[in-house]
Amino acid sequence: MQFVPNPLATGDPNCEHVFVLIVCVLIPRFELVVAAGGREALAEGPIALAPEPGREQLIGEVSAQAEAHGLKPGLRLGEALARCPTLRLVAPDPAEVADQWDRLLTALEGIGAAVESGRPGLAWFDSRGLRNLYGGSTEGVIAKARHALSTSVRMGAAPSRFAALAAASQARARRAELAPPSPGLLAAYLAPLSVDLLSTRPQTAALPETLERFGVRTLGELAKLPKPALADRFGAAGPLARELAKGHDSPLRPRRPSENLEERLELPESAAGEQLERALGLLIDRLLARRERRDRAIRSAVLAAKLVEGGTWRTRVTFREAITDPRRMRLVLTPKLQELPAPADVLRLRAEGFGPPTGEQRTLLQEAAAVRAGRLREAVRQARAAAGPDAALRILEVDPDSRVPERRLALTPWDP
Image (tube, rainbow, N blue to C red):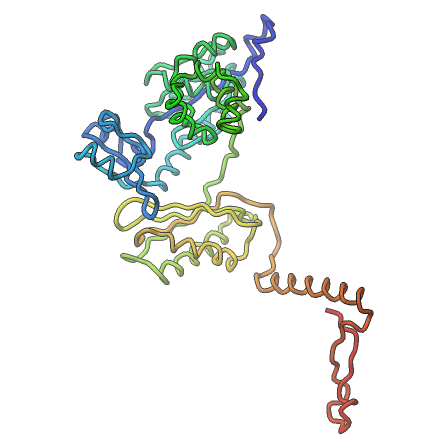
């Protein structure tokens, strides 16, 4: 992995105005707040996200009162209820979470930020190009971003993504935390923080529990461990965690702003089976007919549903190639309806990724026939190379009314 060097390490006294300072936006318990209907609901008692239907019975995000009972995300449902009998479970709402998070990212992009999104509730952007627009300082950029979001967020700034996340986790609701830019001071700033911060990175999410069993509880203790020993015990995740603990990280990967090209359909009560399939076909036809598509092929799509029993369901599908054929889209998306955990009230289909504009594409049957013909031609070529030109012949009707059988039919070279 390529890590971002800190320009301040060169000793150039003029580089303090150009060094990378990444701003982290952190909204704690974002998915739980959305599913519960607002942050006020978290103050009513211990609350947690219920396990997703059809998946392992593990709870999701938990409120502060639930944490006081020893609950944490990923705990088994039975153990969580045993520790906190008064725990209230809220059905997850992945569709609404995705919608609200996309609106917040769009608001950040509205001030000119190139945003990289992590899990819902976590994002980063580089403040260098925005300082001259908003007061000439990082504090001005942070104030503008906070105003654009218009919600309670924690914000921190540091030379790397992981350090910015660490700073945001230490920040107050209305006051941003700025980590020191110097490499030595940054490492000292991160040293007393818990290794639990590593759980926010998918590559290192499994490390904190094991490290704590070995007695490694802070990032400073982790940074002192030898790199070969970490690689031997944890594989590639070990050295990566060590670099993160020192304040190093890979460059930002800003997302590409997406278009909101979506169709939705309200369904009859308890719609399921063939009704859902017909509704999906109607959504596909409507989506492909939208003028905003501008004849572009669809590379990926999101299928979502609002469930009768409460909550939502959402899945993302990436096609092998960008397509515009409705029959091919139905063949891919229809099996996904079987994953619905309950009957649906509303069905939604959104185009997320687009390919280049294309003309009329071949249908699935035409494409399959073309593939078969190509394979046949290759087989005939190999057979003739091995057995001569008469290895592949076809029967041609010459004189079907003749009394002599040999005159009725003839063998000619076959050209598939």
